[in-house]
Length: 236
Image 1: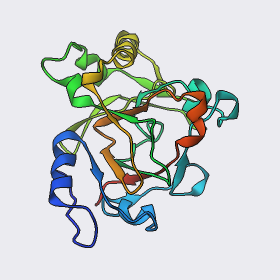
Image 2: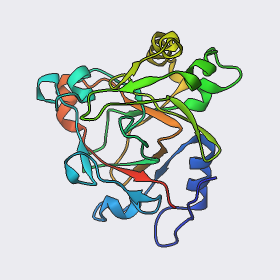
Image 3: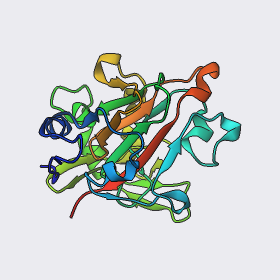
Image 4: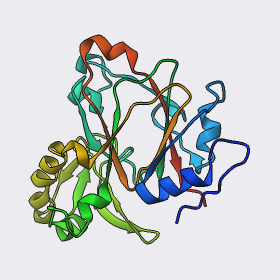
């Protein structure tokens, strides 16, 4: 269960928490755009400091040449960003991701995929054991380390995935590397959700469960998508 309580002083309701628990994501409506996003993020846990020593990060599409080296944008530019776990390069990825559109409607949607569909009994993916025991190396950071992409934390299965920073090490990881990339790259639209935020809306998703990506950005719309993003650690 999620250790979060509804707040009468905010737009977080029991209904939002039910959606977050049942499907892994929810959208808060009618939030005050003048209220710092960090106040909303604190409802879900502890806001975490990211690259550059800041809690809040501004997300905007970038062409490959303009992107930060080793970032996903440096590899994909304005093309669709693949489904991935935010902060997959951390030893313990953040529990929640909180996003808010800035002044304009966000026409380019964020895509959300519930990894439980990948691991369900009726899924076409049948390599869960290799996911669980395979050894992967996290690269593109100052201190690379090895990890599993499928683990159990607090009684729940957690999928860590980012094709830009995870490299297979042993035969178990190698056996699923290509297939997992292919599976996620060719998801049919009915398997994932696209969320285009309006001003005043905040998207919150469970980063231990939901993989996210971004639809491709037409050149003429590159300047029109701007999001604030904060990653959050679970409450103690």
